[in-house]
Image 1 (tube, one colour):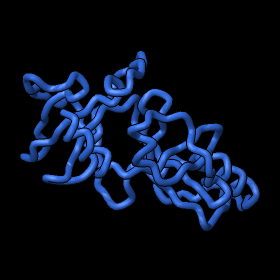
Image 2 (cartoon, helix red, strand yellow; image 1 turned 180 degrees about the vertical axis):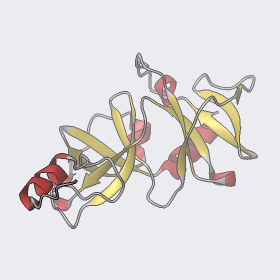
Image 3 (cartoon, helix red, strand yellow; image 1 turned 45 degrees about the vertical axis):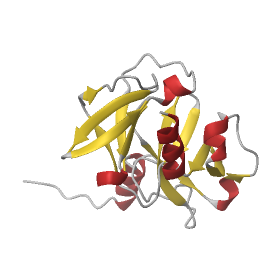
Length: 176
C-alpha cells in the first residue's frame, strides 16, 4: 500500500534547494536579469579572460606538445588536435605570472588553421554579465593584453576582460 501526499509547498521548497548555482551552465542569466549575456571565461594567474562568443573552445587532456628549437620560452610548441597542428602558448611565462599549485589545463580556442592553445589555471567557467556589470576602467593588465582588450566587466569582485584573441595571437606569432 502506498500513500500519495499532495504537498506542493514541500515540492517547491525542494526545487529551490536543488537549484544549480548561477554561472554553472551556459545561458544562465542569474539574478533574474533577462538581458544578461553568458560567456565562457578562463584565468591565467590574476588575469580573467573571456573566450570569444563565436568560437569553439575545448580542454585537451594529456596533450603531447612538440617543442620547436630556437623559439621563445613562452611558446610551448605545437600539439595535434583532431589532425590540426595547433600552436601552444604559455602566457604565464610570457607575462611572468606564477603558476598555481594545481594542475594547469590546455584550452584550445578556434578550429582548424585558426585554432590556438594556451595554458589556463583551472577549468573554464561560465560568467553572466548584465549592462550594470560593464566598467570603463581597465584592471592592471600586461600591456600586450591591454592593447587587444575591448571591454571590461566586474562580477563577484573580479574584473573580466573581453579581448581580441585573434589579434593577440597574430602579434605573438610575430614575436616568436
